[in-house]
Length: 320
Image (cartoon, rainbow, N blue to C red; front, side, top):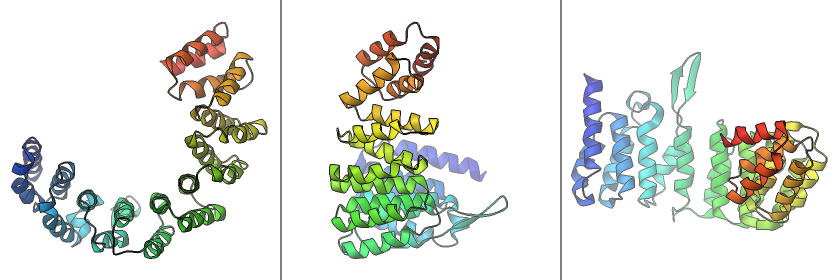
């Protein structure tokens, strides 16, 4: 019965989404008072999609409510996640709700123990804090530094991306320090590399390139961060790493990174590997075709692989 009632309430919200914005206010206000966290999450999403600042007090009341006995009232933090997202979308700049979310841990039973389901909430809260005018950069950085010690890698990666959004020299130095220390998941270190490149620009390309040496997952993140710059300066550094590569897996990463730079020098290098039918020609074909190439590029590759069964199979596999 409860499940059927929830389904009916969700269907009612689907109907609310079709109303003019001014006619949604009262139905959404009522939905935000709902006991079911999934219904409230859906209502908060609708508030976010068609911003209604008049509902900010209702969002805050609902948010506070789901901190009471949270494992029971808001399993998986569905409601709190959506409510924080909606508040940020409405440009709500009071820090307290976000700081509360950043500090929240919610351990729920799983097979063999417990799992913290509040990591997404903490990640959302990090980004929501950035526009809060009452918080200086130094205060923000204190919170972000603490988040770098979060036990969940996704939150640590979010801390790196949030730090990068500050765009300051201090933020870049913090990200450099975190990357130099290392000893973290690849996604966290990759966010540091990308963040420094985003702040410092092409001047940081050489610094990021030094992380290619280990040929491990963080090195792969460094290669892709360099590729994302689409800078000509990245190409010789990626080629130099390829020239000394020992791991076939990492070689394919470097070829993909070269393709993603969209640089003519990189394209020529990849085409030469295919045309010469080198040991890495198959990976070069895959790298080119996975980089969303122009139709002319696809036609050129198609012509090059004709007559070579191995390369033709690679081409057909990627185009299927």
